[in-house]
Amino acid sequence: QVQLVESGGGLVQAGGSLRLSCAASGSIPNIIDMGWYRQAPGKQRDMVATITSGGSTNYADSVKGRFTISQDNIKNTVYLQMDSLKPEDTAVYYCRIRRILMGIQFYWGQGTQVTVSS
Image 1 (tube, rainbow, N blue to C red):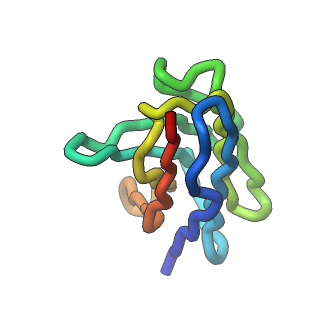
Image 2 (image 1 turned 120 degrees about the vertical axis):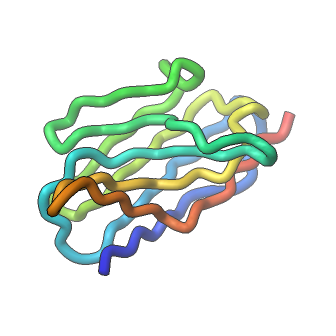
């Protein structure tokens, strides 16, 4: 069974940086992409950044130029470097893996809280 373990969240002042990590247990073949999503209280879960197995990236407009997604394919780990953080970045951040195996499958982490104080 695939498990995703996130780490790196916390409290930071506006303008600061955090680096999130998400490690997947075991071997996960046929990955399409890995990504980070976030959900603020009372709001829907939105895409922050994704990266395909080939290294192509996609970012939400609100984080372009500030966040960088990267991956270690050997370790099945995805990272999110967050710089120039703003209070509006405060949310629970979730990692997600999408793969194809008898159809599309999704795996989610448990979430890690990021709080940016003004």
